[in-house]
Image (cartoon, rainbow over all chains, first blue to last red; front, side, top):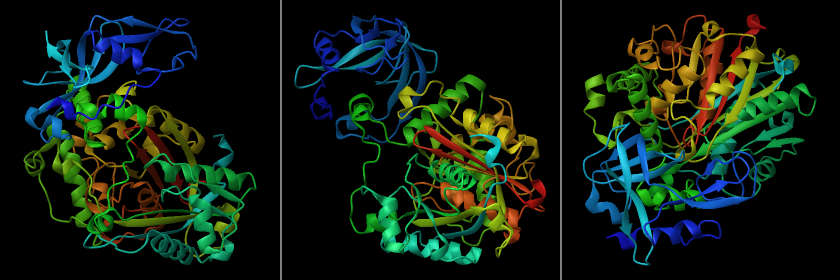
Length: 131
Length: 390
């Protein structure tokens, strides 16, 4: 099913993120100037304007910030996952991203860890699982 | 925006068009022209008086210039800034500033959209949320926009402050009570909290009856100088304060899901108006979803942050309540063609003129029209008042 997920081709700035997913690694840029994490991948740091950004591997652990259980599949690839949870997760290293939890819905404050859903081109989608 | 705009300009003409079926199957340009000429006639003005034009929909390169050509207007001021449902309040803010600076005298602001007619014709949606960033970092996770984003905000507010589903549902119930008083509203049948909670989820925790309509519609307002306003047909609704703000485009980039940019635009507009929330007689808060209203109430200072639930749970927004809100029936029950912002301004002005019939808020002298665009992304707060408030 996942091969129909509409994932765009990586861009020049997001290629490193997607390459890391091939190794089941969650990677993110950190700004050399202000030392804050930058999500999503960018050419310029949205916190301070710095342009020296360095990729690093994150733990993949975090806490659920918000969750919405979806009862209709927005994408054909998710039809067998309904109901699925769209979540915002606060990673332990200090960045927030959107993802999914499949199965029983998590609650705000729940601990989660990254898992991977294989795409047909060798990349993987980061989704989260209860810890 | 500085205090210079306080009382410098006024809304002097308004018009809006809705349909009992929800469908208005005419070309957008014709619909725009219909509400513009109606708003000008309402003011006792004509197209010959217009030297400013604000419009931001249509999907082509220079919408304000294209519409000006159609109307035979050569504007010295145009603004096509697009901040979703916040655009039209922002246009009022910019128009008032332009008028105060002598760069325009009479500005028309218009909005028209026919999503229902387009669907009937089999046209595909515009994909307005399909930004490159969203396609890569949100769309693959199965979001349904905009509802997923507002659902996440509602969930976070409930988890943080203990806001209940019944409190959010009360907003929809009270809005429907206003719609029952408005013969032009699309949905007028009374509903209960249980009806809302039983209407099913699309994206939890928001129920179907907490989500705005999709209907065709159009609205226009005419803004002119205070001096000219006093010579015209209708009692002016003076612009006492106006401000805009924007904080993010995608919900996953919103700094705090319980605080909208209204926390910036609201206080800034009140400062210019030299008023406080306690001075306001009637509010028109963008109700794309119930949570949109709740956050606006808190962010504009009508109640402290986190106390929106108990505030609305007591029926504050209902007819006869302490803060009458969304008196047309709002985006939830009156009309919602994609962006409701222009309709907020129309109703705020009508309430100040005292021409709202059964739904009239007695002796309303001050009104807030607060637009929210995107996914809680951008806001505009406009504070209007009658002559005695100057």
